[in-house]
Image 1 (tube, rainbow, N blue to C red):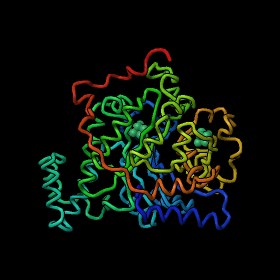
Image 2: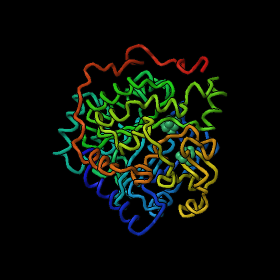
Image 3: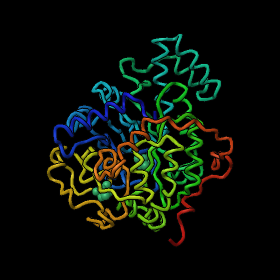
Image 4: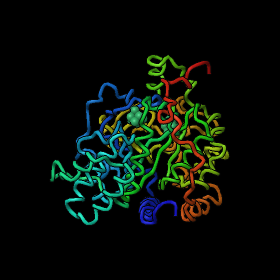
Length: 425
Ligand code: SF4
Ligand code: SF4
C-alpha cells in the first residue's frame, strides 16, 4: 500500500462519518503554523514575507492543541516558518499524537539531526541494548560525529522534556525543491540539500517515516524532478507531495525589491503548470506520490476541479486564515467562523474562469487535492481509480546509481545567488 492501512482507515472513517451526518464542509488536514520564524529565506516563500512583522510571535502550546481539537482534522501538518524552532515542538507532537492525529512535521531539515540526537540521548538511557547498535551504525555511516556521540551519551539536557520519537502516526516532511544545485539556489543557502539528505538517511535508519514536499516553479526541470524522486526512492523515502508554486503577493514584492527579479520569471501560470506536470500520472505510478490520481490528472490538464480550500484550513498566530493557506483576506477567531464568514463561491476557478483574479494561476495541493479526495466533482470510475492507486502495491524502491544528486556545492558547483532567475521572462 502507498499509505499505511491504519492511517488510510482513519482518514476514510472521518470523511465517511462527516458525509453520513450530512456535513457539507469540514477539515481533513489542519495546517498549523505555531510561528513564522525561519532560519532560511527561500526565494518563493510567502510566509516569512507576509508575516514579517510578527516573526517573533508564536502560538501557545494550548492554542495549537485547541486548534486541532476545534477543527477535528484527522491529520495535522505542522508548518511555519520552521517548526523545529518552536520551543514546544516536542510537546506539540506528543500532544497531537495523544489526540490520535496523524502528524506531518514539515521542516527544512537543518535542525532535524539535532532533534533525532535528542531522541537518541533519551532512548539510550531507557533501552541501551536497543540504542547501542543504532549508534554504532550511525557512526559507521558518518551520520553522527564522535562529538555527537559524546553528547548523546551524556544523556538528555532536560530529562522531563519529551522527544520526537519514531511513530507510525508521524512523518518528517522534508522540504526539497530539486537536487543539490537547484534546491540550494531556491533556499538561498549552500549545504541545505546535503544536510537534508543526511537527515533523511538518519531518520530512515532510526525507523522514522519520512515524506518530502516539493514546490514546482517556472525554472523547475521535470526531468530533474524525476531524478530527485528516483534518488529519494533509493533512500527509502516513504512518500511525496508535490504542488505548483503560488504567486504570493508578498513573495512577488520581495523578489522585485531584494533580488531585482521579475516574478513572472519564477512563478507558473496555469498553462505552464499543465506543461510541467504533463507526466504527473506517470510519476504517480512510478513514485510513492501521496494523494489521489484525480489531482494528478488535474495537474496534467486532463480535467477540471473546483477549489475546496475549506478542507485544509490554516491556523497561525493571527487566527484562522481565510480563505486559504495562500491568500489572506481575513483572520478569523474560530474554524466555524472561517467556514461561515468566507464567501467560498467567490474563490477558485470554474471552467477556466477565475472567480477571483488571485486564483487565476492557482492549482495548488491545498486547494484542489481535497476536492479530489472528497469526491467533489467526481466522474464515474474515480472512486475505483483512487482505491487502486492507494491500496495497490507501493511503487518499488529504485536504484539511483545514474543520478547526480550532489551537483551543487558538494561538486564545487556552488549555487550562485539566483542566476537562473534573472533575465527577461
Ligand atoms: S524553509 Fe519553509 S518557511 Fe523557511 S523560508 Fe523556506 S519555505 Fe519559508
Ligand atoms: S484557488 Fe483556492 S487555494 Fe487557490 S488561491 Fe484561490 S481560494 Fe486559495
